[in-house]
Image (cartoon, rainbow, N blue to C red):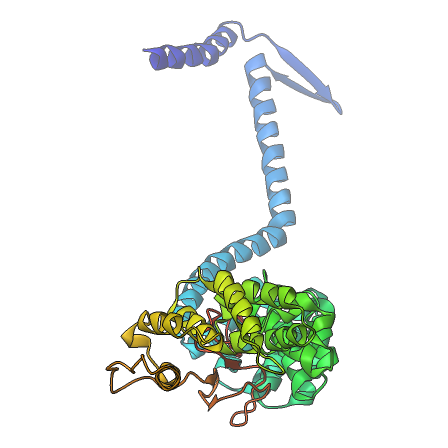
Length: 423
């Protein structure tokens, strides 16, 4: 109803003036350059309307011609943007499938469609890296390094390519440049410290890891402790860092024991036993120049109270060894019996044998015929096993890659690809 009323009002507004002018047309005389033009009001209005329409048409044509280049560019950009959305979808699909050819092909399309050089160049470089076409990757990364906004990204990737090609000196050069741009990037700091360690530049390797702590990277902190020892710094000079690795913990415990400071040695064991569970930490604590049963008993009680709440078979074995050192045969037997049959290794068997030889009242029980070998340090890169920790693997040459299998810390694995593209 309202629409009908509205339409009627519009009709009235148009029709009434026209009808009124038809009934009262009036006269209009125009003298222009000796020409007399005679018409009425309605004719004059018609002429004005036509003239106004011509002027509007003229301006529309003028602005259309004037804006045509800009409109053409905008239309082209709009079309390219639509094509780019399709191309990006294809890139996403290619990334999920690992289709390197499709990634490179569509990266080149994106470059043309959006007139964009950084993202497309980076994609082509990454595609080349995955395809192990390192020369090609270097070509595109060298283009990127001239752009200050992505300079770090270029040097980081160039370092990665150099490491893959075993060009150590070149890798160090690129890593140092990347490090200057971002000294807190975990991948860059880890790789640079490892490369410096390979060159036996231990002090420099420690400095590179200056921002590393137990929060941002416990594994790198462990490496930092290794480098500290290799650089000649005594663990006692940096007690907090010394708690990050088993080799440094052993040294600092031994230092305190040799200086008759049982309290500090126990404090180190208390802070690190649950994490490392390395039996030699306990055995070093019982080190004596000449055996004294009173000293052994005192140290047993302190060790027992320090680690008893860590409920693991490694703890039970450690307490058993401590009791044996204190000549507490019954205590030794009780804790050996608490060890799960699934976790019995040759250390347990040997302690049973020593216990039965030391006490006529205790016999070695029936133990499983097949038991585990003694735990050994294992290289996370090549699975090479050794009895005593060393900084460099003799088989594969990796630095700081040995881990203790009983430790709660994950293997110190040097994985060059891990988190590389995300870090």
